[in-house]
Length: 499
Image 1 (spheres, rainbow, N blue to C red):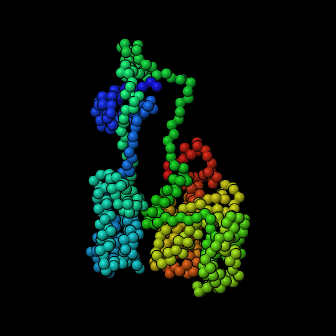
Image 2: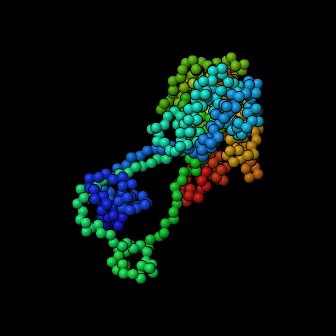
Image 3: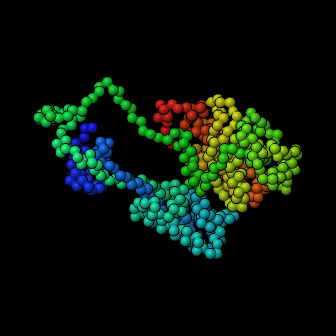
């Protein structure tokens, strides 16, 4: 293998101390180079020729992102709002008081609700409830502030940071950024040591013939790079995320920014959790084979007897919810059938069943399955965006405001809702956005019925919504055929906007 001039120079420099392990600074000094790209290129060529061995040590470094730099200058949002709360008496700690103050902007005031709840200051009846003992709250805010201050001084290796605080700030958009640093060292092999000095003489390599070159005599002994004039010129195309994945990340970032936490669940579920828990009657058309993928393995899934009894009571007579139920018999065998989930609402229902007494704001983005005929608007496998809010103040206006805020952040400020019917919410609404002068329906929403929440043990109202991701993607990308999202057409993909 023929060595480049840079490789020869680097090898000559290292042969001056053949037993040494050379780092970047030492090689730059010995070769009189100022650009580390020379070392990387020459070192790679020598490694390929078997004349040096390269060792790498990778370190993940964390620094402040744009929002983190702003927080370092003006203080973390929760710290500013907590300082404002600490200076107020109990009667002037309301949400409206905060929005009218200089402690936070109107947008920040909404975000601060989730941040303060996380440290132990919930919003109760429109007013922040400050406990008698605030030591834990102040300690948490102080640790977070010190974490940001430490990163203000410069990048810090991940191993030197508190893992819990890093996980917290990683879930908040724009506060921290990571960068992987690679430290390389080079060491001569026996082949590199044994090479003849005459083979390390540098010669002129010519890649472009210029008038200045021809005026001298060096070109007569130069090495000319060959060219194949018949080769087509490549069209450079940069790598990027698939539009669907980019949209998922954009949606995820918006909900995290709004103070929500993300949840997920299994594709395989029982009919009980997928339908019975949502008060969908067992003779509902959605349960038939034309809509649902029932499984041969597992054909049935074991359910807790107590849970099945609760569902049966609610379906048959309403249980203790004040409802009359569906007035028909309930089949435990039907409830235990295995299936592929038909919606991601099953994730939120199971989350509520596990934590019925904990206020929450959660969302999920996941695949669902229905036996649909494939056409320009339908697929048998697609994605849903699901979310719930459960807390004492949860209400229909809160749900409408949340959805309008989400779509506004997505770039669609004109949003409206209209009455609808869903078996498991009351009241129920369909959400529409205005696009190209027309109103388009993008999802359903409402307040979970008592028949859904009371058997789970929930004591507060639950706002819920669900929307199709593919339909939203068609809106964002201006598509008329949903199948276009999953065709492997590199030309079309390369022309899509970066979301």
